[in-house]
Length: 395
Image 1 (cartoon, rainbow, N blue to C red):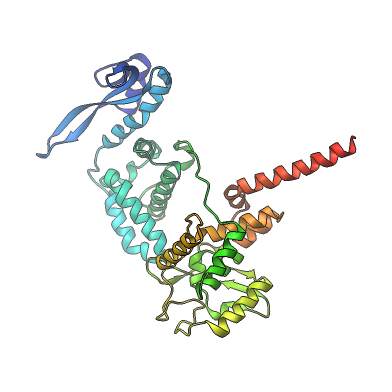
Image 2: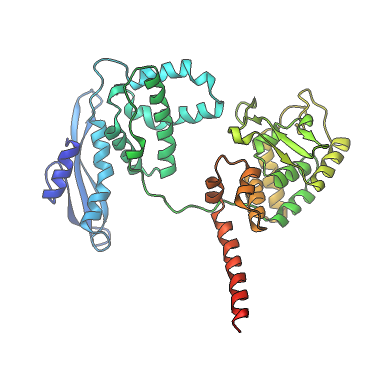
């Protein structure tokens, strides 16, 4: 098995060698020449012995992919081999040992959603590869090999970044407890390139009006609150009657309902906890709802199910899908209401900094990134208007 430096030397001086390299080959199926990467990796037999297996992977056609591009494409596979080759810890704390300690002492203090995400990353990606590694062996080079292995498996940049967040969070705790002297340099890591982003599905204002009018209570008012405030669904499910201040005309966002545990927790971030203005039309609808349709419940929730308990997100989502199907509107998630609110505000000339406050993003850059397509359309219209004025003056 080659070391990190040996791989580079092999690529630089040889098209093909017994341990790793690339060569041209003819695809029997399509009769075309392709680049084939060849390397060896250790595989554990059922009896526990190690077998060094020869592997090959097609890296692209010779016609469309250069040799250098093929070499670059082979990197993640070889990095994955290097990662597996890292020796197991002979003494000291392993990552697996530390994770158990973290679960016992740290996880109970975190939000359930944070713990669920971290445990998913650990179970699916981190522990299967790095569980027996010594904490002190998890350095920038080895983490880069780990990320390259994830990339080779088709993981996106966002997925890799989320896994890194979990790993770095664990190691920061290990450093605070003086188990390790330093944490790997995250800024020095090379992540996979951004793929083509799928535009987030959202409703048009007219569609939201149709959805509200076609729904019975409490869903009709629930859709109205989601659409006119831009709140997250979990925040609306956690609203209590006292959170509606008709005198000051605000809705107080102070908590959210966890979809999995159905327990109340603090909002997503500090900026998420805020007082949002209530439009006059929504205030009037809420007064009518409280007077005629509100269901009394022990927690004094604004919206609850038939037995007085917090609403179940999946059931609410299914209700939305049924309504969309009846109206002939394309399927969309509950978050489409929030996306509609922000998009319509920007579309109507509201400054991104104001939209940021309404959406309660921690940074205005998040607003600009999420709704760049809307801002681009508004800018195009503004430039067209400017052009019309200038050309009119030059006639």
